[in-house]
Length: 252
Image (cartoon, rainbow, N blue to C red):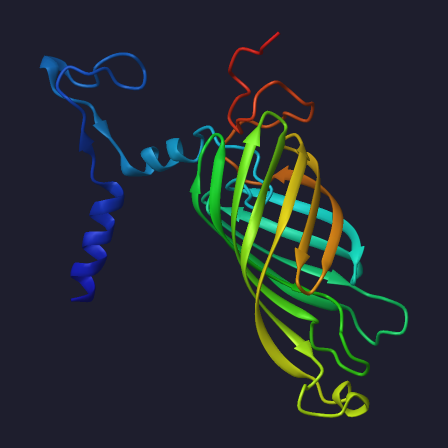
């Protein structure tokens, strides 16, 4: 059973799929004589998918791109972020800060999953924490956010909204006020916010705000190519909003 499964996976990855008869190959000529269709390998098709035009997303990174960000805001004061994009749909990373008086740096995971990424719109979900203890002597984050996001892009700007749930530490309502702050409890609430990005494929400013447990910040982010499939460059603003537009004619 195990050998059969491995064989099936290998066939799916390596077996060629035929093009229509007489259709030219990538080089502009038929790969085989007599009108036999040239094979198209699934791995090559995957590479094409990772070079398709997509918007400069505020929430999701292109495949093989590493993002480094520094942000300031409320209530966490500041944070540093590091993230990696995989397959154009998954973004994984960490965010951290270390304030005076803290025994060790605080850190938390950042995860985003894009359900759809197009040239003008992207939709998905993301999770993050607020690196701030809501109560003294606690190391628990002030809030955990799990949100769905929709972003609309035009040229070098994009903006959108987030909606979902937030789990936060709040004073226990069953206790008197003087004791409630010393015995916080977890509470789920509906939450949401807005986000905005301005910049190029390689750098940009990201502003975002969330409620009802307020979190507001402004971040500067640099995106570096590690093993991306799209062309390098595009540090300067251009008239397009696509991530793969380097080879397209520029507008004047």
